[in-house]
Length: 124
Image 1 (cartoon, rainbow, N blue to C red):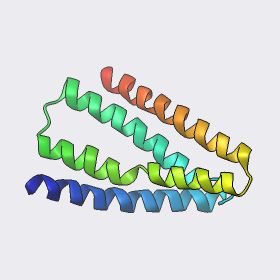
Image 2 (cartoon, one colour; image 1 turned 180 degrees about the vertical axis):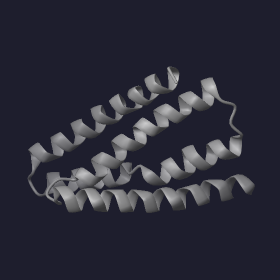
Image 3 (tube, one colour; image 1 turned 120 degrees about the vertical axis):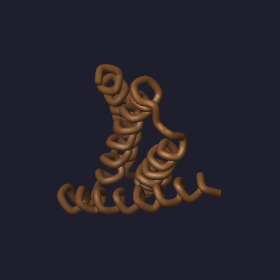
Image 4 (tube, rainbow, N blue to C red; image 1 turned 180 degrees about the horizontal axis):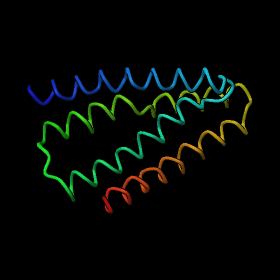
């Protein structure tokens, strides 16, 4: 039961952080393209690459802390379901180019961010 509390608390915090960041990005960049979701996903992928590398290769971290941060906070922070819905909405509206750009930026941007986090964590 304790593990579920750590995950739930982390998810609560991650969701609030996601909402605050994506709202700020949409305010700055507009809502014609899902910039907020792309930004959140890329940042989340970078952080998970960095932290998992540090947790597995550099520091001993208690399992509850790892659950809290990785599954809880980052699970609540990243937004793959939002990405999927927004891409579908772009397709449904006939914005094929924007849907393709959202997919490509999210896929390759998130993989690159995870790799960047891994490289920084490896050399930390």
